[in-house]
Image 1 (cartoon, rainbow, N blue to C red):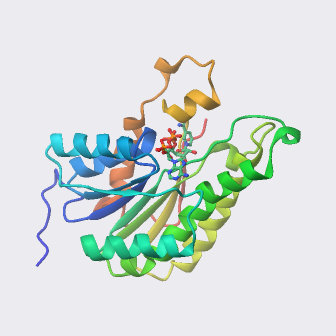
Image 2 (image 1 turned 45 degrees about the vertical axis):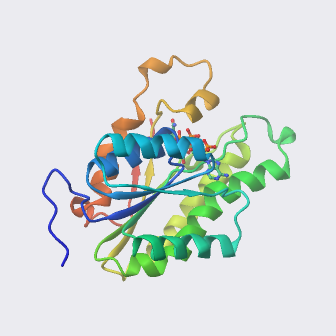
Length: 247
Ligand SMILES: NC(=O)c1ccc[n+]([C@@H]2O[C@H](COP(=O)([O-])OP(=O)(O)OC[C@H]3O[C@@H](n4cnc5c(N)ncnc54)[C@H](OP(=O)(O)O)[C@@H]3O)[C@@H](O)[C@H]2O)c1
């Protein structure tokens, strides 16, 4: 029988997948989820970064995580099915997904953007969340309380010059979110929400705003209480919401 986790471990007994777990928001969230008692599946492209997060979790006394290397820019249907199969066979279930993996090709006028750049951003930022959710849906439906969090971006909501294919991929993510939230609206045990962070001091931000004074920016850890809340019992009534922190 599943035990009730203590208040300090609101995510105890939960198995959570975090994409883009090697750095930035994904890394901070993975550490926060583990500190809150979750067994975290760390998905990302660079194994050495995932191993470093794995070590940090174990060193802090968190539940032993799992590492799932994947290149979401190249993944096909069968790879997403294999990912869900691996989670099911190795961990026995899944209670939530935080989608933090992100491809950003740089700021430039549309005349200088290539189809390849657009496709990579679309595959990582839009297709991967859809395909991971689709492959993992049977596991999520088998959970007592499953929570999926998508992470949007200000320019997906308010596109502007030079944000090109990145902004379009994030706008498409919002459209996907509306459809998925609608399709899951009759599932009492599966919820999905979209978080649009404001500026966060991450490696991505250093690329989008290289001239900015970084020390003044909120840390990736500043968003973690919200992510923990949305993943756990406190977030149970938050579903189909866009939680926007854009300036
Ligand atoms: N930082 C901000 O100010 C800010 C503001 C608004 C919204 N956001 C959103 O928040 C989310 C997280 O942002 P972040 O700042 O943490 O981003 P980040 O620092 O760029 O980290 C992105 C992560 O995605 C992984 N990734 C990239 N391409 C991948 C691929 N092909 N396959 C698998 N993993 C891949 C990276 O892994 P590798 O390191 O191994 O390449 C990295 O761990 C994004 O959706 C972003 O749009 C961020």
